[in-house]
Image (cartoon, rainbow, N blue to C red; front, side):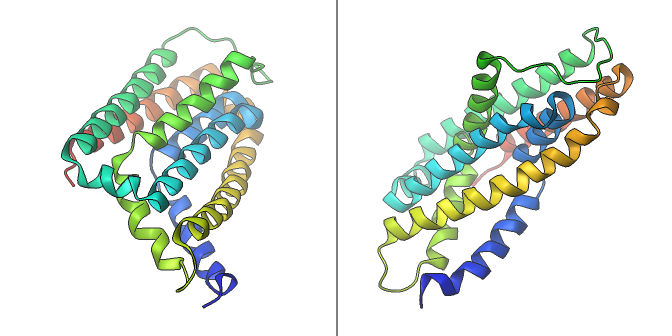
Length: 210
């Protein structure tokens, strides 16, 4: 089977995966609502960079080692859960911080851009479930006779490109209503809700077994 023949099924699977609720979606929605489209770009790029690293780990067999190791799985689970809870608490603290209404999102500094990018990378890399998912997902779409590492790397590039387009389109749509989201009362409710979602996701990750 040629690689091009499996791309439609692979693309459909990626779209369905991307649309599922989770930490990535919660981060993008909150960032786009509060910081606008440009503020969500580093978050999206960070998430996709983390995903691509896991894809390469899966192709190299490292993800399988992580998924099979009780210690590595536990460490990633604790770190990932702790980081999501940290982001949720951070959102809650922001909810009660005085804010002035703004028509335009605050300009992002280089430090803020790097921080948002790093948050996306950490959320992806500290998710042990993603390791287990990757080692089961990509081999289904690698045609017989093709090298596993190289083909997985190509498929991952396609996934990253497709997800980036989808997530940036979502960020753009949410960013259009940014003025409404940045109203103090709406912003407070948004931060409270997104904080609760992130904390709940963190608690769920901490409580999950294999």
